[in-house]
Image (spheres, one colour):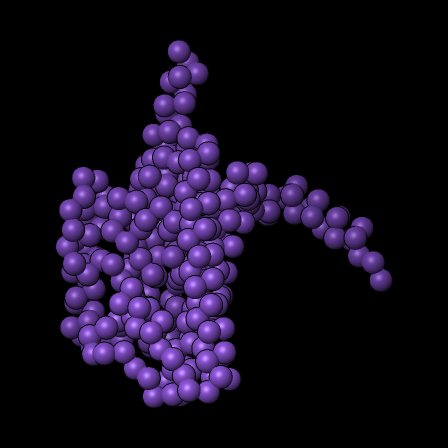
Length: 267
């Protein structure tokens, strides 16, 4: 049974009574950038799978890099490419896995280059927000572009807690141990969590908000680890608080851009 008419009448009553909540509809520029950053996110996941396949293959053969060599660094890849296998079947498997790792790395680099070019062609308001967010430690151009593409205008959130709820990085209610809610690991949630691991050492920045964020998040990171908290939970907590500073910088930049535009129109 079709309920289109009934649903339309219900929507009309809700609209008349003011019960509907307005949502932000992304424009063509946001949609285009969102498609690109999501393509890069998919490429990063494929790169991780390719690395896992090659790594597990080497572990099954008992092959490990020398002590002190971090996985998937330049020195580690140089060691991997020197490996040879006695059986032709294993050599063919190894060559295929290594080719997929190299292909995934080229794919990620190509998409990140496309993101750099896309940002340069974005409207001035979006470019200003992306540049402003990069003042935060751990936020680079790709991360800032992902936040802007996924979230949209940050001024549409009246409080930073609304942005935290939108990203899914909120605590479960009525539980003794708070944990992030079971939301999908979307780019808008993964980006601040990944950036949170970069707040440990102190850094220098000319932006006032970013400097406050660096001091607060760094000290809180150390306090939580000193209490024996799990490192992943600490990163989630710091990422949630980092969203508050992202909201502060984004709203400030967007308001400045609007004021500049209004003055130029008035002149």
